[in-house]
Length: 325
Image 1 (tube, rainbow, N blue to C red):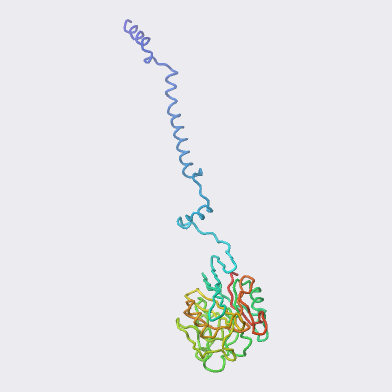
Image 2 (cartoon, one colour):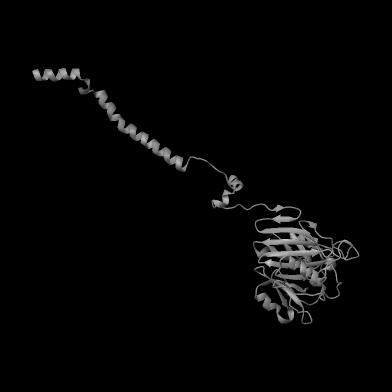
């Protein structure tokens, strides 16, 4: 009995030894509260890492900073940038420069393509035929061209290979053994061939898409292929000229010169070849010249076409052009 009284006295002196039901209940609440806090913290951590936006940088900002390329983000297709003398898009780069050579204004269009399909040819009225012709400007506009020069005026002759955009319209070789043609293959490469030594059907099987029969060849393997005596039949010595050349794969030069005026004397074939070599051509070919010579860019005629008697474009059979479509 005395022992029980002593224990009761100790309990009264030390409250912590008392079995307080409320204190016991509060201690039982801590585990679920702690678990709840831990759950909330874990959820917030996951949201912060994977859902909640942090330091956001837009694609536009990346493009401005140049980080888009470094980070491997894909480039969006851009709109073409156009000036009076240039055109730049994802697949095409054109820069037109005016030179003065041999007392003559020369217009050189440097053309770089990402794919050979941008280099095309157009026919007057969209039709093959000897008596069908339009100006370079008209044909260029009909074909949504960016840049265009006159072609070989195939309709002026009854013979000579004619292939346009992969279709062989004429496979009859010109008379004689010296006719040189320009062949453009599906990969965009240029080659000068002789009709007497090469069958048109063989060129088609080899992947030719364009064949021009005017000439002559101006540059072959980086070397000038004409001399002072070279000239197109029935042509004056100094003329307005048109030429196309290849610097390297998918890198071309379109050249047109003025001529037969007080301001511009015109070029001989040798002088034209020297200009093409100066511009870096490995291969270059003479197209129809004289009154036909025309360069057209974004709706405007670049040069000053003339036949010596009157100014303005002469109607032609065909053009060479660059287009996105």
